Length: 453
Image (tube, rainbow, N blue to C red; front, side, top):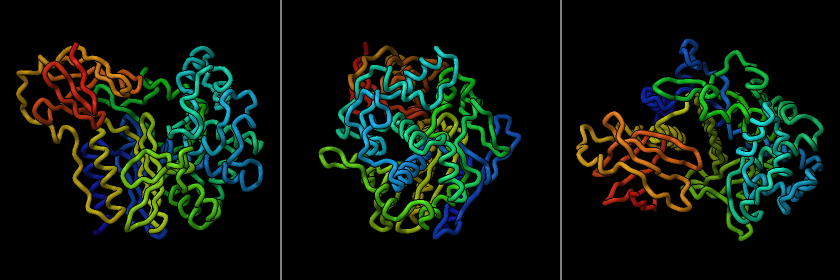
């Protein structure tokens, strides 16, 4: 397979389907096989993206927070077994260790809703120290006992950043720059708070979201107001970088410039729960989550570590083949509305990196039935019961401009979207992969059956 050509074809197709605008790079044994940039980095579409463009990498940032912890551990300034209360004495959540924070097994409640209220009350963008206040003031119960479950936690990584600052005696942002980015040769990479301090890059790719047929900066939309009040955070995200610096990071790790092989092996080991099982997302080929890395294993390629990032306006992917010496990174600055289409691009690029033939990208519009029979659609309209323990809830189905639409609640966030017919009484939508099936007075999705009210 000509991987260079295959990736270029995949990127062009994804851009034409409006699911990828950004940069990519793929290398083997440290040599670049494929790279490039496509699209514009501003809403006016006057400034083309270049290969040097800087993107927010969102949760891909977590591996740098974990690396900072490992450096301080080597210096004897902390231990993985140290409890949260050692650093924050007023912490009301006993038994949580640095290890639990790193592996998303702490059981800490999420701080973001509390942070929103604090932002509105104080009229200022809070710094990362807000998480320490959250521990003392929120009064929220833990989600579970430490080590009992795996549950992804941005709060945990914000606290890790505060621990780095406290133990090192310098701001977290400065520690990453001096101890990780500069030694690794990542001279375009830094932690930024662009709503607080402004945009420090000339070649900055602005993250945009699509609403009402046009791309906008998320700050301008009420539903994304949290990008402002969380902009003082660090540790869980807010690293800005480009594809060349991410390649430099791969080589610095492989060559042992910052972390020893033994330290990296510990970071790439799946976190263990109290019952001895691995904490993980339970995805195909995934064997667990380590310290800021998802860990996969493939029969022909060996171990692979990766992380994805998503934030309003940005999607990022960084994947390192530990045994095969390959690295894949792609950074996107227009948040793809069609999750199915982006998923096709995502899996296609990863397949090419593994030496497999990619499948064509399919958006929901590609698979929707043309000229469907709408005679029953009115009977689908109405309110539906809310199933217990469901993250995604269909509240109401209604007709608008001759098409079916849904008002739904996804993990507490309200949204409205159009349905596309993909089979007899079966529908999909752009923002997710669920299929909604209408029956006799009911609606079925996932493993739930909801009665029409």
